[in-house]
Image 1 (cartoon, rainbow, N blue to C red):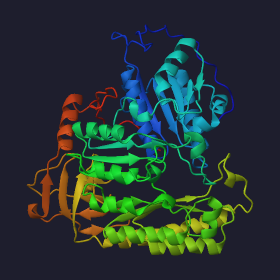
Image 2: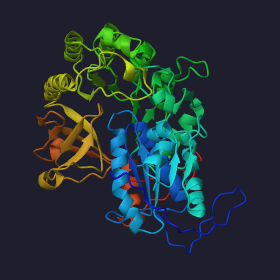
Image 3: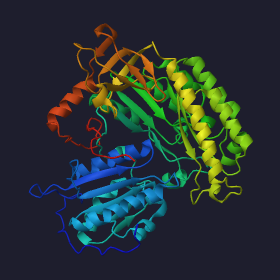
Image 4: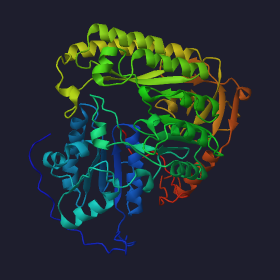
Length: 524
């Protein structure tokens, strides 16, 4: 990207009239300003992006049509990976000329990288109009309007949470599923992780607020929710109830119409038996667990400041599978942490072999400025990290394929999704998620009714691949369809949007949760 500075546009927008509460009043005669939100990183960021979209549509913006240039591009950034900075500034560089050619276009940067770099974003890319952090998502519309009015950049980074994200308007990415934040922030001090300094200390929502949001999602047609937190199984510590997360799972089991409950992510050090019992004894809590391992070496775990060891980790998995024999477990693993020896890496390989993960998110360690690990001695050379990474991936690919093969011939109930996969036009298959969250591509037999996204189908698995399963019923007898409120919601969405994709966004009252599909928001 060029280091040359782009002259700031001299256009000045007239000040909008304001309501008594200070909010901008949308002029119905004005041309609808369009937006696009580009999301990088974790599920927390995806959830935050839904809030950004909801705020923008409440402020009078509309989603940009595919293939058009939006009036506003918002980057919701991640700061976990080494290439996060390069990826962001590469995208900003590509938009520089586009903005110069489109009068009035705005660019905003938010999320973890904005919280970390703060003024650096505007210094490196002076054509950015708004920089905001993880603690003040709700300020986005005001900052955009202020920047337009003053014809200068607005930077607002708060060090403490301004408004809990789930109290903001939302535009959901999926008709049938929804994210629900139960906490924000993290109290752990892992030496490789910059999240606590960007998201702050853990703050927990009260159970009543969470359950009210879940009920509102179900009332709008959702049949699945995922409970989100940086460390979900420490939920309740802030208000003095260490058993609160297990109680929350059981309470979700009492909500009529809620068919699937998932959560991410727990921390092995805080994972307790009451959560395992709640999962096993609550029918709508899915037999799926994402449990970050990070390393199988006790020495490396100590250096990472991960307060568990491999024996405890494997013990948790043993208890989970004893209570739920068909549970699928996924994980995160870092390869090449500073000081990792070949013996340490072999310990990781041993634990991975023993754990039998259905899949794993594997990462090559990259130093993040501001973390203790970035200044540790004995950084592992890139070529060694790469070689270990390839060995680990090969091992996990084999295990994943073997675990998938065990499901051939079994009957699986799938929640049908809108994304049918890259080869759907060639194969004619649709896609769904099994209860254990495995992805299944399935065919609809001739003469059988087709499902809608959000409906359920029961099929027999006929073939297994490394990263997905296939189900090709030989006839209608091997295919069962169950209509659901989520499928009805899909029909309403289609009717309301005339197939174009417009959604209605409402406020944050318990019954006002909007519908939406991921047709325009690229996720990197």
